[in-house]
Every structure is written in C-alpha cells, then in structure tokens.
Image (cartoon, protein in one colour):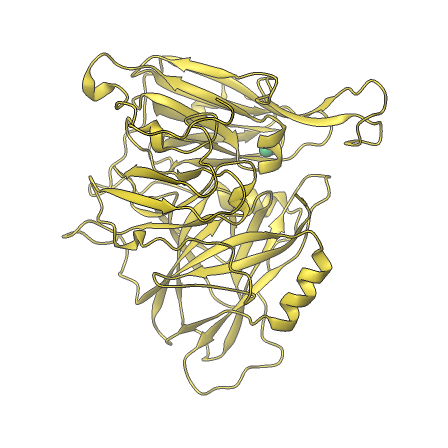
Length: 478
Ligand SMILES: [Cu+2]
C-alpha cells in the first residue's frame, strides 16, 4: 500500500447520500442509516454485507461504549479475528449514554482510511438539544485520500471534481457534525467571516465554545453551530493540518463553499478563512483547553474522586537499532518505532493491562519522545472518560493534581496529549472485556503505540461480559 497522504477531503454525508469534494471519490463510505437511532437503550443489529474488497476488515464503532459487549468492538486480533473478504459479520451496537456525533471505521491495518461513516445519536423523544434547535444540519467528514500515483489521482480529481457547496438560508443556524477520519493528521477547520460555536464532542455535550477555528484530531468528533449572519454571498470553509512535529507531513488544504441561498453571484475571490499556521502549537492548545462538560441537571456528570488505581503511561516514538544499515527509517539507518510505557504492541508480543472490575482509574499519559516529539491523539475503546488535566513538561504527581478540573471536565473518548507534555484522564473500570488503547495516528499504532486493557468480570451477570456470540470470524490458518 502506498502510504503517501496527498489530499484531504471534506466529505459530506447526509442520511441518503454521500457527496465529496471530488466527484469520483466514493471512499466506500457506507452511509448506514444510523441517523434514525433513538437514544437510550437503543440496540440495533447491523448486517454488514461486506463487499469483496480483497482485504480482511473489521469495523469499530468509535466512541460507542458497548457495555459488556467487546465482541462487537472490532479491533482485529484484540477482540476478534478479521472478517474475511466476501463474508458477513453481524455487529450488535449497544448505545448507553452517548448523544451527539460519533462515527464508525474499519479497524484492520489502515483500512479505516476509506471505510468509515458517521453515527448520529439524536436526543431521546421528549427531550431536545441543550442549545436552540438548529434549522438544518450537515455532517462533515475530514478524510485522507491514498492512491499509488498521486499526481494521476490529483489531475483526475481536478478535471472531474466539483467543490461541495453547503446551501444556507440567511439568518438560520446550522449544526455541523465534524469528524476527523484522517489517518495521520490533526486539522484546523474554519469558515471565512463566520464564528463557530462548539456545543459537543465525542458524543457528549459541552459548554458552548465561541471560536473562529477548531482543531480536531483523528478520532474526534465535534458538533459545531454556525449562523448564516453575514452578507448573502459565498464563503470558503477550509481545513488545514496542524503538525508541530519535525517529521514531514502533507500540508494540503481542503475547501468547500458555504453558499447563501439567493441569486447573488460569487465574489472574486471567494474569501478564505484565516486558519492558524500548521505548526502553531499555541493556537492548538488555546482551543483544546477550552472544553468543559455541560454538567447540568439535564446532563450531569460523575467525575471519579477516590482513585484506587494510578497508571503512569509513557508515550514515545522510538528508534530501533538496525545492525547493518538495513533500515531506512532514519539517516543513520535505524528503524522508527512507537511505544506505550516502553512496550511496543507489535508482532513481538501482546501487551495488556489488567484491571479489577470497578477499579477507579486515573491514567496519566506522559509524552517522552526520543528525538522528534509531537502530540498524540490517545483513544480508549469501551469507555468515555474525563480529561481532568493537561500540561507541558513532566507530570508532577505532587502539584499538578491541585489544578485538576474535577467540576466540569470534558467527557470524551480521544484526547490530545500535548507535545512533550502530559494528560490525566479518569474513569471507572465498569465495562468488563478486552479494550484497545492506542494513538489514533495509524502510523504510530502500526509502530506499536498501543496496549490492550482487560477489565475482569465483576462476579455477577450484570457485571460480566456477555456470552460469546455463536459466530466469530475464525483467524486465518486457525
Ligand atoms: Cu501518536
């Protein structure tokens, strides 16, 4: 597989169809009709009629906690073996407290590059949004496009492509459900001359954040309100990468047009949003530290206080010595790797953390890169958790906890671990099963920046894993 990332796509998914920046890029986005899901206790059966893509694939419902049901969680060789091409596998998706926007994606090698889609969970009947009901809504998937011959793809796209336009009615407010499905890039996103109000992330509501740009990492979702309150005209929405690493990255910008309904002609040029520079760490952290839970009577939170299990986990990109210059990962002929607590989750071994049922966990991620540092989008399956603190430098377990937010921390499933910094999360280990924890940069996961967490059964039926389904895909050659 070519791993050259060339273009970012703004991909717009509606209930009935998928359109993309470039016609001709279909991206195998299975627009499953999940939009009709009722909230709370919903349980649906998805029959994934997998076409013969010539690869084995698994799907994960990213951010859905799947109580007691790791059997449908999806990561290959963690909870199940890959689903062979041309076969069916039924996933049962169990929603509990999620509300807002989540997504699903393949979890086999890098197949999530093109196999992904949105999951939208509306408020339960009889309840509504904790903000004024939007006039309309639009799902926006930021995705990356991989192809062997990049210039050929580019030229074809330019020749046949049309830019997506989102029609808006002047004076009305729209909800954008933004998903970053890109494999290896965090993204800034904004709309020219329009303010954004973030009202949710990762399937949970937040206190409103007023901003003129967002920064969203692979794995994250953000619900964003935008009001068409400018002159009736055309405005670019755009997304460009954030990367404060010294490693090479693709700095392509992707665009679409917010177009007011009316007879006006397009200005020349159509205004572009001013987004932070690609290495603007301050702009990124200024945004990411603004998140607060709603923590209201309608949407209460429960931040764990009495911690019974402290875990400090180092997060690092590493160099692996190659004895005879046989590797080409660095100028010195070494190989790049990645690790959690100096353990690489690769073919060299299976790394797990065991937790007793009900353990109250504080997990502190500590960035400790050797050489080239960067931040990491750390994601945990099977749970939402509270991000109670972040900081730069080394975590100090005597003084940093004094500054934790235990009042209204965001409830999320993916966090941005700052470059050479730390992030502290809290959760109760009340979901028995095997759950993957990994960096959501696929390159790093492939290099080993991952671990499995085993939460043991609690001794009763309701605190134990559900029985193994009758059919699970067999492992190759087993
Ligand atoms: Cu990483």
